[in-house]
Length: 140
Ligand code: GDP
Image 1 (cartoon, rainbow, N blue to C red):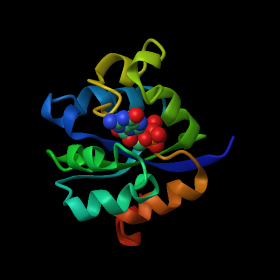
Image 2: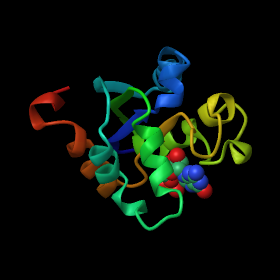
Image 3: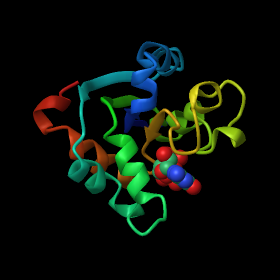
Image 4: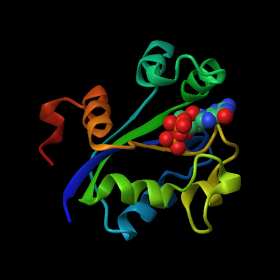
């Protein structure tokens, strides 16, 4: 198995409800290691840049507003197959379709306010990590 790194975000709906510790316990208990982490408030420009791939979608404006509505935790998770593993722990985008025991099933408020983000492929993981972290912050 390959050791990978992936970008994880704890979204504003979760930081607002004080769920940071419970969510990160799930990653750690699953064998993923948090090797970089910061709590930040995104600007609209920063949220739009991060979600640029979705700019044609009907929900783009609402999604970016939601991501700026409170602090987020941006973090890098490392471990065997970390990209896929993180997405398994997160569960499906829509919490109504998420498996039992996943973060989104247990904590998400809606398909939009779904508590966590996780990169979906090695290329996007590398791009997303570099969007938030400099090389110096990634010695880990
Ligand atoms: P993810 O990889 O599971 O996060 O899902 P996507 O990349 O498809 O979508 C990115 C984010 O946009 C999701 O995590 C949701 O916060 C939001 N989103 C996705 N689909 C919808 C939708 O149909 N409506 C709304 N309002 N938000 C959505």
